[in-house]
Length: 121
Image 1 (tube, rainbow, N blue to C red):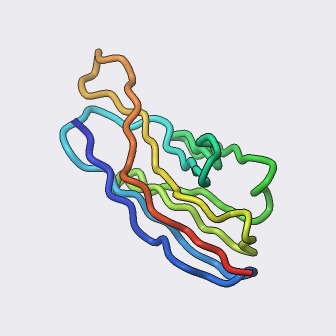
Image 2 (cartoon, rainbow, N blue to C red; image 1 turned 135 degrees about the horizontal axis):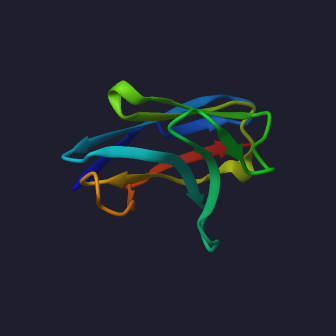
């Protein structure tokens, strides 16, 4: 099983910055893609950014140029640097990783518990 522990959320003024972290632990063979999603009240969960094991990244149009996703493979940790934050970025942010428990196991997605990000105007 894979456990994910997120940190770094909080309250920030518009234009400010926050850095989210998500560390994976447990017993597993490998971690493939790592991603951040967010869910605002009354809205569906949406993909914010994803990074492959090799470092390729993809972002939602709404955060391009403001957010940067990165990872430390040695520490099984993914980060989300958020800058120029806007009130519409307010949401619960969730970490998601795709992992193989064993070498021949199919990849399975795991979710963190979520961390609240609130941007005041």
